[in-house]
Amino acid sequence: MTGMAVNRIVPLVAREALGDPYALLTFRHRETAREGRAGQFVMIKAGLSAEPPLRRPFSILSTDPAAETFTLLVKAIGPGSGALCGLEPTALAQCLGPLGRPFTTPPAEEEALLVAGGYGIAPFRLFVEQLLREDRPPRVFYGGRTRADLPLLDRFPPVVAELFPATEDGSLGRRGRVTERVEEWLDSHRVPARLYACGPEAMLQAVARLAEERDLPAEVSLDPWMGCGVGTCLGCVVSIQGAEEERAHYRCACTEGPVFDAARVVWPGESASRAWRAAVSHRPAGAPA
Ligand SMILES: Cc1cc2nc3c(=O)[nH]c(=O)nc-3n(C[C@H](O)[C@H](O)[C@H](O)COP(=O)(O)OP(=O)(O)OC[C@H]3O[C@@H](n4cnc5c(N)ncnc54)[C@H](O)[C@@H]3O)c2cc1C
Ligand code: FES
Image 1 (spheres, protein in one colour):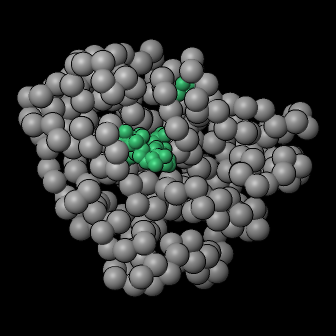
Image 2 (tube, protein in one colour; image 1 turned 120 degrees about the horizontal axis):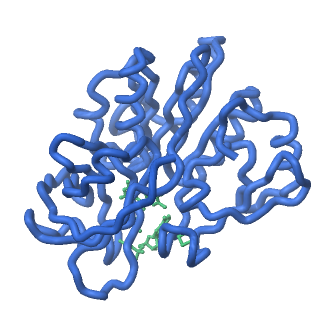
Image 3 (cartoon, rainbow, N blue to C red; image 1 turned 90 degrees about the vertical axis):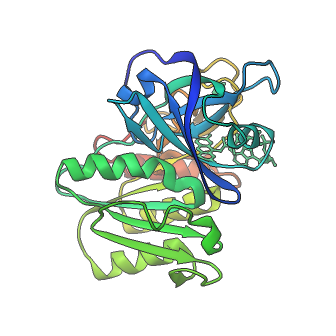
């Protein structure tokens, strides 16, 4: 974990439209630039006024410690994200970060398989850079409904062992769900692997199921609504099964996540007892609680 998150008024340094509704936004924020880790996020809102009242959570896509800047991949879907994408360079935003728990580093003997859906690719750029520094190029599985959902494909990631794009309509990469490509890879590579996933909840649940079937450790970055980002509003609670007690507990995704051990997440529509069995039978070393 990093130190205390810092709240600052930050200027937008650069904006690059990637094609509606995505943009890359670069802000100056010293602490996030220096300390931001893969899987962590910032809470940010455009402008200095009280409206809209709440900051919104966005994964840290990349950092530049020397320039003291960080970059976000923002999909404009509503007032908060739309106002951020509408900022002009030098305009100000209110930013709190870095926040949350990052992905854990895979043990040396495990291949890292990164599974991203849509803007869920965002935390994996830093993760790829981290793994490359350790000379452990990961596999990246990047999926969406159509090619428009893969806005970073041609520039992200710069160097990976293999990149597997997939779209449900077949407009880019292989037709089908991204998790099908992960399954194929696992079928043809009988090696120890650890799955890391970020994307829509259905995809995260599919990755968790796949990991359970194959007895593989997996970490998922959850995407609940967040109000404060620091553990006070309880807007972000998710049901997490501990291995020690039989009852699932609500955990704040902002402070105890957003990255969780997939085996411990009680998914909507699922019973806590299934997660209990999974948590007890499957305790990956070094995985987040
Ligand atoms: C840890 C974390 C990291 C995130 N990283 C990114 C990122 O890198 N890039 C990015 O574009 N977005 C990211 N998001 C999602 C982003 O926070 C939301 O899109 C944003 O808060 C929407 O705010 P808004 O005011 O624009 O729209 P709102 O009016 O708040 O929402 C518009 C619509 O989207 C739905 N919605 C809002 N938030 C979510 C959510 N979290 N999950 C599912 N549906 C939602 C609402 O129900 C509503 O229907 C992340 C979320 C979390 C929790
Ligand atoms: S977002 Fe407020 S407690 Fe997590």
